[in-house]
Image 1 (cartoon, helix red, strand yellow):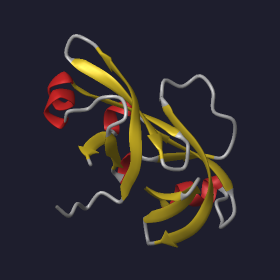
Image 2 (cartoon, one colour):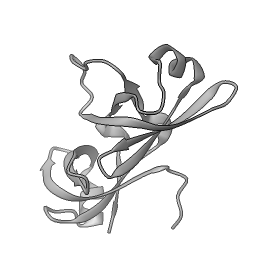
Image 3 (cartoon, rainbow, N blue to C red):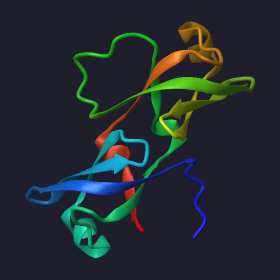
Image 4 (cartoon, rainbow, N blue to C red):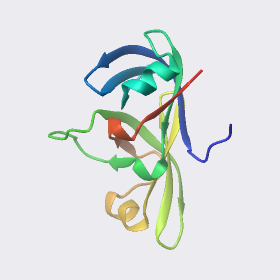
Length: 139
């Protein structure tokens, strides 16, 4: 199956914490960073997820935010340090590729945000996204 989701991050499940209806699944990416996904218990069962399962964490580029300074006081679980690798800017929006370990992540942000943050190739950034915006694919 081909998907339009730019961010498809291979990794391994390191923990599954079930709740009443939802579960949090912590995934160790191939580059060593951890990502948390909040998915339904039904999805955990349907995908057969358990510690050691191979997965791909899927995050739409439009759900990725970037920060250039210290990040504190946020409920966002996923905060990955990286370096801007490429910026493609259009009239209103920009696509920013960020090297995070051995993987590239793409953030779709406004052109104004690129300017306001002073982003350029080589800029250090923190990639941010909510655990509820992470989907998991088995295998």
